[in-house]
Image (cartoon, rainbow, N blue to C red; front, side, top):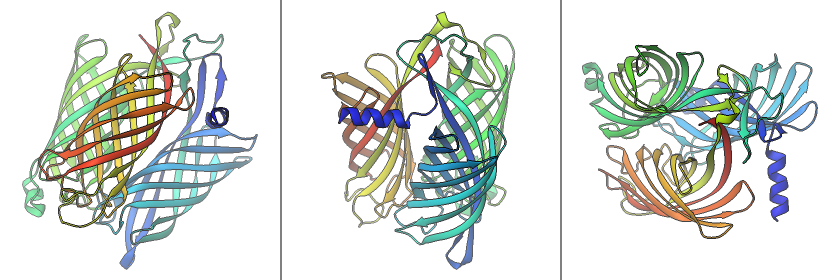
Length: 491
């Protein structure tokens, strides 16, 4: 059994293994399509995905990864789904035939998504110009336990690059060209103060949000980023946003800098009127470098939904953690082998169940709620780690419910294969009729992991989910696979 699992992992791991460095063939894909809902209603859906490519032959390749789809036009702002994606590509010269499948959970925006399970098979024809692909896709989006079943043609584009992973030894093989790219992981807290016109239109006043941002430098002072946040207090539990943008820092000495940011993306939910879901956001602020890796930031700006009544002032405080990771291309600093270390991470794909409880929903009725969850762990030492989780309902009459949590964990090996772990998580969540008033949640968990191979574990955990203000107080069961990996970093 162990031999077969190890062989399967070797087949799935893409790229080329050169000494102690693994180059992962990766791709970011974006697309747009218009779904047709009941009563001939249109919903413009923006898709984003991170995919890993595994070449099967000179012309054929297999890919797999993660995807998220969100409404940006129509009248269903706040509609989000997330899940897993896989497919095949076959090249004929510069033309690429593509076929794949997405499965995930989500909903929102009062759309008829039922329990939230989304299935999306597609076929496409792309034109390849090196590390860039562009073309058309024909897809079918279906919510089996809801009332969405749509066929459509959309546009899609993808950008290919190589990610770098490492083994236990940090030696760089001779001739390997790597740079150290600055990557920043930033927890955020925000307060939105809606304009009077927005409050009068919906009755939704001020709200607090918690979120996370991932950024990377493009030059000495410019950077791009992806940020996600959701309501954790105030009048809009269930509100969420997913934005991408660019920023610029203007240094005023070694420790202090001014900064400006522009972002756009999808947002909505929680009775906030974002129209079709498209929003843009602009801010100015400052940051103070606390240590070599940590920086404190303050920003103030404006967020606006052109198709809805939502407009608000946005105050934000951030705590950024910056690490230099090895990259195969792009802006970065030269590699200094003597300063290298390993960063230890774990990616967990889990199935969660909220057990049926009278406190679960705002109104009585309904059974268990099943969710798909993605977790990312970062080791801080031998036992401690920090963790982040995103989860979305796909079954159980809670379509549109989603949660994003952060926290700290502890693990201890009981034997070579068996370990015990505990976690304390907190963060925003809402939607789907669950009683999360305000949106702030707390989730302690404890469980076991069993090592299947060098890099793969099976995890079984259980715990409690409680809302700080709402009545939600129920048990949670979590079963998943844990993929452990290392990144090459500067000390």
